[in-house]
Image (cartoon, rainbow, N blue to C red):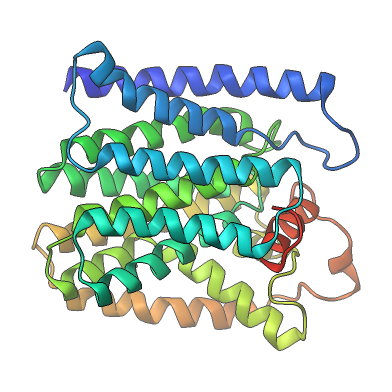
Length: 345
């Protein structure tokens, strides 16, 4: 318990300090004109999460637990992929090859059957990019991911996976430390390094923790825990398809952007997304504890299409949509989404 609190505290402080250092270095030596905000903040989240998680065994105060070390290695590889993509163009084949290989390694060690393993790999890659796409507005992805990480940490500890629980708690703490710099007005962004690392670590940990659990219960839990990112991704895909826009292009058409169109501030939209994630996470935890039947997720399942239909009514593709909203980070979002189309990595 004390080690967990110390690890979380260290993660918050170290991430905040390292993010500030990276920002200062980028402002002094970085290339200008790519983005108005330094975009390599994910280095801080990834390094601190991996470093603090590994400090336990090194200092002989805690063990990682079975399956955690390979998960850290796979997440580190994805973070490195994102970092390379932040610095130079990467093709879609390279990106998917690395992500699928990393996800396959995690799934193989989890001992899933071939059929379930294939679905798990696809789910991990999808959720990884869903979190990447959500990183389009100050504080939005960090808030949602931190809440999701805490929810998964509770599930891991309850199921006898203290190593995964500690890792997820450290990730949540690191994201909290990063939010000190990423809250509106953001002074530094996660970049692909941080968003891909976070999404992959959350998705892979969810698979590892829920291996062996009843299928219906697992599906209901994971749906609830990832409700916000799944809704945002579905909204963007449907919206762009209907508008005849490139599905993998960027734009100010995410939930956070539409909430601002409705009058919320940037901070307000991040808070709304965080509260929505917290509400869905509580439902997921109730299902995990057996207090609520998995069928209880059905109302949440209805919330998704209703939310998408209502948010589609908010205009975002008119002439004004070409003007960048404050801290919408549309250019960054466009570049990040273009990764899948073979653009920047």
